[in-house]
Image (cartoon, rainbow, N blue to C red):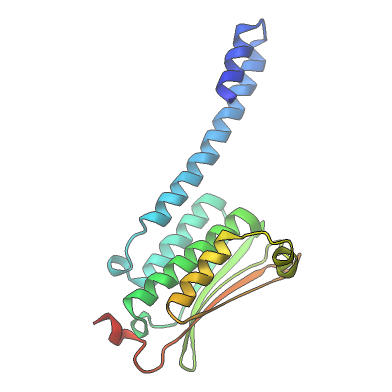
Length: 191
């Protein structure tokens, strides 16, 4: 549509400045959309957890967020990925990627913290931002489907994990994935 509009402007006796302004807008639109396409491709074909390890794959997702959004992102990867099965590690990566995408697209955050840790027999991933937050109850009450949140919840359910999203307007958002690692659910499954 933008190209057609530029062609019409060029066909009239419009000034070169008008055409240049339209081309500048088109260039910015294409750059933004190209960034979106690259983000989708990265999510479809991420570096495998087997190649980089879980911490390395999460670090790559963090680096991607930093490059696209220029945010300050800190990481504290204290939980041993060996406690998780191959399937659990993939879910952790996908949830981390989706949470980081949501920060980039919706949060308006300046700072993000990605952590992993152990709490008793539970392996925990947490993605916390200082962005605008949102009213979870209001979103649910409007019946608005949030595919990102739904995607993360369904992935968590597949591995018997719990996904908790806490947010309030003007108070940031925390996405927390808790995976029980009791007997029979950890690294033994990946063998």
